[in-house]
Length: 313
Image 1 (cartoon, rainbow, N blue to C red):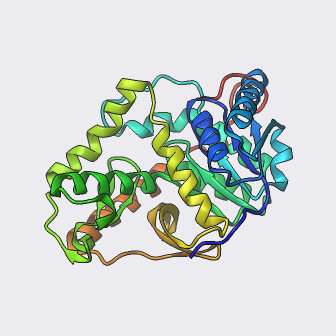
Image 2: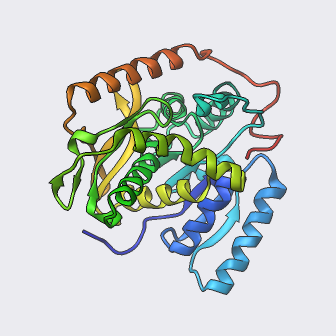
């Protein structure tokens, strides 16, 4: 079910690779009426706004882009957190956890600046399940979602469709849990054209594990996929269309990815049926994420104000 229009502007925090991809995607979609861009590097945000304005003129988009301070995002219908602190990620496994200590202070600071925000917040920053929980608890915002499992699910459906030589839209299935090594493929509930299917699990898991690295090795960072996940989720969270997105939300003592059904913008978490092994995997992932979050310092002030200086990418 679709509805016309979109309520209010959308803000983006972070003007690096992912923030640029999200901004470009939203500009061409004409979903928001305005884009507000916030970054610690004012020149980078201003350059992105100018580039988007050129695009707006060339493409005839109605969306206007301008820079702003973090505090100016309070009037937005939604804010996308796409920042990335400077750090060198040398991990060979559990790669997305590599940014935990570097990104947490910056996310904490932005969450504090947006405390009490009434709109929707989509967190893209990795490790996304932990950063989503951190943002929600520091900010007190009630509509905070992480987009990691959404992207994993899109990759799963594409990989399975390719393996079975069927159209991607014929595949219905989910990847839940962690956006990372704790991802759970819901093979038991997956269907093709409405019928149960045998999923080549090892092949699919290998594809899900290696695909992000291959993309990053070729173009430096995954960006188009996360931007597509943001657009798809915003359409539902802002009530433009109804449907299901796999998003990181509160689940027991953790935050992790599960399907969320939106109807007129209202979210209802809807965990799919799981077999015993999938349930065991999900429980283990939930405990792992709970313990990783508990190990974060309750206050992790950076050496300088993360809102005022240094690059966010």
